[in-house]
Image (cartoon, rainbow, N blue to C red; front, side, top):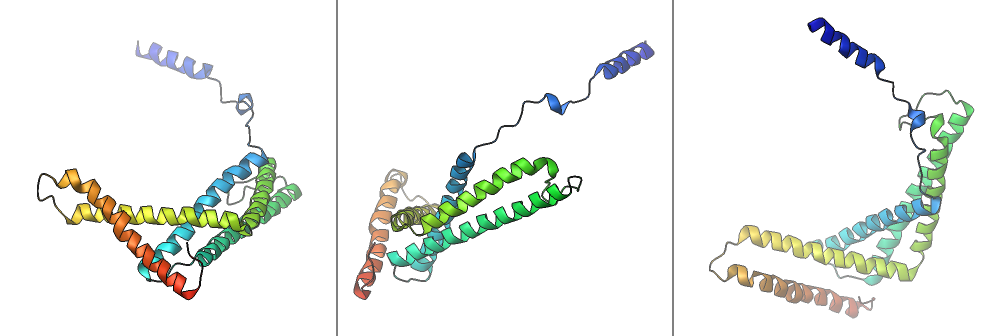
Length: 214
């Protein structure tokens, strides 16, 4: 009995066909325009993060006044830096494409690319170039820079408020039954009054120096 069971398993193994990758449906890629738009969503997030962090450090850590023009310059630098990164990626891809076209049998590079990936690499190269071009356009668009700064500034205040709320939860214990009931109101007043006063102070300093006000 044991040998017959073993034979049946062997037969099932022999009937199993090896995986055939050619039967898979062809892989579909985003168009260059679609890949560009997705890339720009990521770069907007990265640039907002950069401006937000500069805002928090300048206003809350260094206690310096806030200038709209300086924040626009921070945004411009962030976008220009991202454009340079995208250009460099396009150059690296172009070099890989040339290398594999010259020697199709060359082993995969450190990133896993081979001759079979040339079409994908060319697609990514074109998208990287378009992303770099769009980022440089954004870096010279004053309206876009102002909007980016406004979003980053809102992100900064939300992060500050969240950190304050977290610290209050850790440091202060409820003292009566009304604590939780009035907690939201106290936090709201703290953010809208105390933080607003801090912002107003920086705006007064800005006005007195003749720089842009927010």
